[in-house]
Amino acid sequence: MLLDRLRARAQVLSALRAFLDADCFIEVETPLAVPSPGLDVHLAALEVSGLGAPRWLATSPEYQMKRLLCLGLPRIYQISRCFRRGELGRHHEPEFTMLELYRAEAGSEELMRDTEGLVEAAARRVLGGTILPSGTDVAAPWARLTVDDAFREHAGVDVHDVLPDETRFFELLIDKVEPALEAMRAPVFLTRWPRAMASLARLCPDDARWADRFEAYVDGLELCNGFGELTDPVEQRARFAHDQAARREAGLDVYPVDERFLEALEQGMPESGGNAIGVDRVVMAITGAAHIEEVVAFPQSRL
Amino acid sequence: MMYDTSDIRKNLKVVIDGYPYAVVDHQFVKPGKGQAFTRTKLKNMMTGAVLERTFKSGEKLEKADMEERQMQYLYPEGDAWVFMDTTSYEQIQLQRELLGDTPDYLQDGMMVDVLFWSNKPIGVTPPTFVELEVIETEPGYKGDTTSNVGKPATLSTGKVISVPLFVNQNDLLKIDTRTGEYVERVKK
Image (tube, rainbow over all chains, first blue to last red; front, side):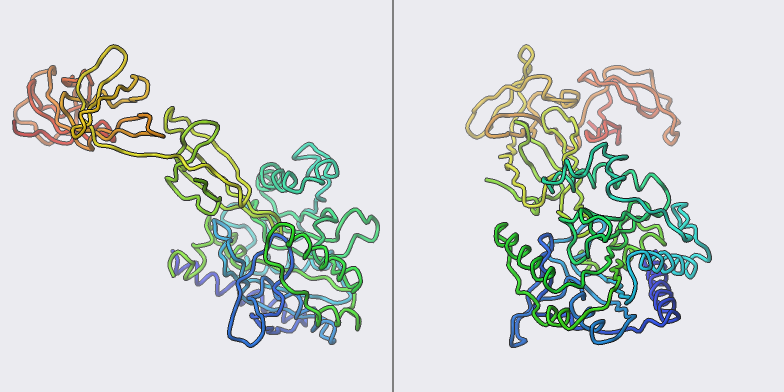
């Protein structure tokens, strides 16, 4: 069973690359050990010593890939390992595989279409069709549902009434919204996240209460997290300062700001969309695996 | 002593709402770039009731101070059952409702594991296998030693189990207390 899943995994990797290569994306490689591992309050990084400067294993390759966008590569992707301390469970390994892609002169709608196409292509390669073992059909196009509508429909609340309490927001997300998305038995993008959860996304041009961010759910499994990217260096610096303060206040490690990333934004970043797709989870969905350990050769428990 | 959510694992004993619970199942949940939670299924160690509870990452849980001691079963006394520590001769009583199906297997003088929570006895685990005498069953059929067909037999504790047809009254049977099932006939 594991060997079958590893064969499917290889087919998924190959199909993802073929899809992007055919669309003029180029594959890039950026360092795994980086000077800033990402400042998001809910991520913890693993420190690396011996490189002559403070380094952490990347929680995502975002900063360096955006520098490549700024340097003039308009369509890039990378399949690399990301590391997140303390994340271990049915859908999490502390070391996992991410497909990160960026497309210039594009926004989240184009990136959602890329995502549908990628997962559909991977499913076709492994299964010869678009129907997953669960019965869910991943043929494009997928449904779009705003966070606002999802909370109204499935949690019976107005997000803005809940939001000052972020813990409550995430409790409702995992207890009410995610199970409802799973029950849909159809892939869906959850779009337009509250601005407090913008991370590195721009705010929606038509309504600044929302961030231009999306996540894809297939059978309740979250497959990706994508943005219409924030390109404003001043706003980006302010968010970093805010995240650092929040980390300090929460008693978490406060990682440095990646100044070279901010310099690149100052030089000018094209309007872009970006997406990070959890490759292990794509393999899980396509092979019908219930646990991430079923699609990884050597998870922590077998290492 | 407190646990952290990262300590949660199967069988961890914690106090919730004033009761001791054992973790039956647990699951790490973390929405994208969001807060992490641990979903748990917990079993109340006094009532057996199962509870589902979600904890925020980093949330503290009170450790349940559990201890298991080998004690000897002495006799029933009203609604309680009396056990004795064979080293200190200390005697304790356990109310019937805390014993579950253990009385089905208890025999005078039997050594059992008594579970204490904060020094209060809350439960008893009998040995995995016990030997009990059949006090009533229909006469056995001599030749039949292989058939899967069973018949009821009443044991000395009053418990009724299904036994093979060859079993006779006054036979001594080995019983698995985890399942309550017949294992084999033993020589007296």
